Length: 179
Image (cartoon, rainbow, N blue to C red; front, side):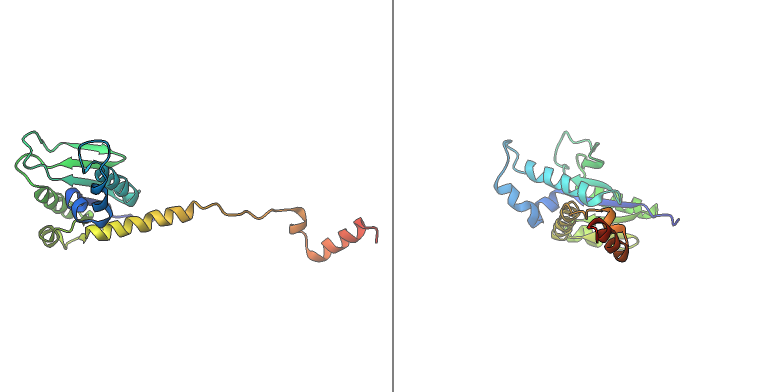
């Protein structure tokens, strides 16, 4: 059996939420909290879980460099690591470091962002990139595929008559009918 190369999905959280068409509309209808990004962050998490599946280890990095209380700790939800960059460090720097470390370890890496600087910095050497809108489209395709796979299919009723050769079935019918 061929050995599979490990894969890492790194998502530039706030960049995707602000520039991805799939998430922009969610800010217009915020949920019950006073955080307008709450609904879209939850949607992004669900989408990353769905997209990553069993193929990728995934991490969403949010920028919190200006937050005096951010320590850069990582939490895990649904198998996806979520990280707010530590005080004084941007999400860009964290993403670049994660991508560089993964490349050094030979991990196939995909970075989702529409930030041109990050794209230019991480591209190459086993690191691929995908735009925020591209990610949204990929997620929609994954979700469509999942919906189609779960559509119930009509099963064919298997009977004894369907397993008997046609000529034998005719003889049995004739015997039954007394002919």
